[in-house]
Image (cartoon, rainbow, N blue to C red):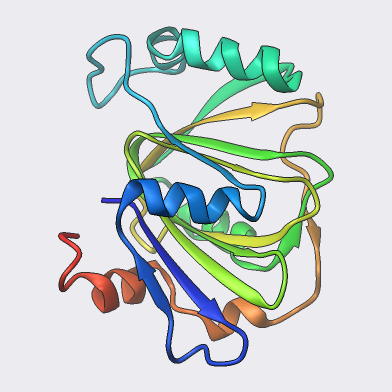
Length: 191
């Protein structure tokens, strides 16, 4: 189940928790973040390769390419036994921005985006079927967890792909990692 937790700057100990998909998408839309739910055009095995995944989601991927001018799409897959999982996790955990959209569609697994567009921090738990598009220049970070299990389609408008500009802030260290977030919000949410 997707989940949004809004941490207000004035009182971060009293977050607002939103589990309803429509309310969650509307709240994110208010800060310019696109959040949608997609379904595959075909049944996918857990070990589906990049071409199989992109073929299954061809129609919505092409729609986004046409709408936003994306030039390419690929698939990133990280499992608990991935040899570089710790380095990959660390790469995304510090607050950063991009000069381009950061678009992810969760084909499988889950991950936790933290968005920091103003004095509020929005924690978005994304799971299978979720599409999130973080606008250019919005401060954010991402946690895939210590034992990651995710498969995502990534879309890019530039040939360089994922390029981060780190803010140098330690804000990400003051927020829960994926495992703690899941523990904190499991009761009452169906997670």
